[in-house]
Length: 454
Image 1 (tube, rainbow, N blue to C red):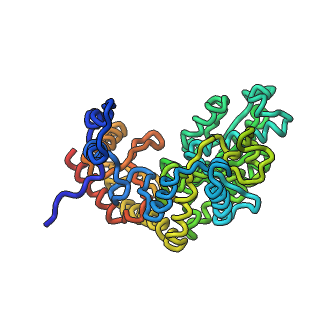
Image 2: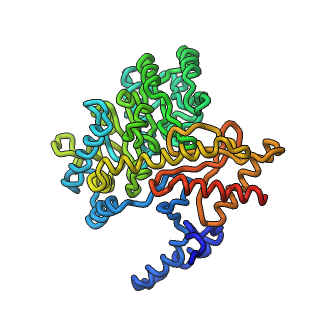
Image 3: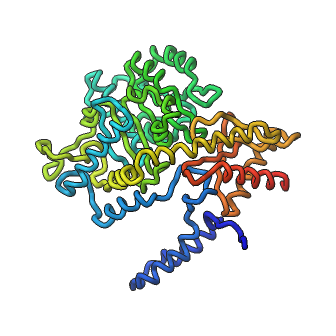
């Protein structure tokens, strides 16, 4: 006996979700018995949460915690450890310090590299740009911590170069740092949606007389296409002009651990900083992000001391000296239990599976007459559009949006939509090894069926 496929979320509209949650948010003088409260959550909230663990979730970078991650997360939750410093959690603080060092070795970074846990890749990128700006200020004899950007004689000259496809968190960063979006200069992309190297070299030459380029940003796994910028070449350019090189590897950096893909990350050991989000492919519970630096002393630019903790004379490890949060969760433990519980061999196999599945899907779609691929996949993302004969570009854009809306409203599967080169495209993302090429082809068949009906 076969039934309808399990939904991955309710498919409800925002108004319907809000209506369901109204009772849960009706705060009252008297509390509810725990079983009744749990039943209310199960009835009113859970149907609207996305099931990342199902193979038909093919839209974003999220994953359910693995059993190994769950084991670490349960301890972290049970003890509710803040690990800002040694006084609040000797074991937690030391675990974070040693985990960061172990990850630097695992990714074969520079011998003096170090890492710190962050609340998200967005904050990792923001701190990386601050470190870049701080170093640039030091070279000019400016105390950035005291003077801010007002310490620069011409702050309007400050410039950061990043690809057109770079994550929008870079805009958040330049806003928060007081630099403004005019400091963020977009670089053209090549046919594979990576930074166009000749264009980069030309822009650098043109700007050197009028702007102070203090940071280059390479993306190791762009959010739209999963493309990996040429890190090694950008490291050469950054070294030549004295700029900081930051690699935003929030999505893609995990794939360096897969031997067949490792060459795409060549030069990462020369980057001044790297962002990575283990909560994506590894299923670590959120928050679980990291910022690596090539020189551990670079973190000293973040240090703020106090009289009651993080004292300047303390000899114990104090992770809170490396980043702003004065309260930080024990994020290292679930990551440690993932690596130790699954083992590198199984973990790498799980990372490899989505990459292979997306490449196989691209091979399947390439010869189809009514499908247009927009890139060759570097990682686990594929962008394409349905292209029936006789439709104008505007009509094709409308069609993709209709297909996306119809798929999402069913609640049976999740895809995404993006824009590349001015065209609306459908986008499939795979981070889970449970999603196979058969699951992806099933989604394509569903899209094709809807397309014919429209």
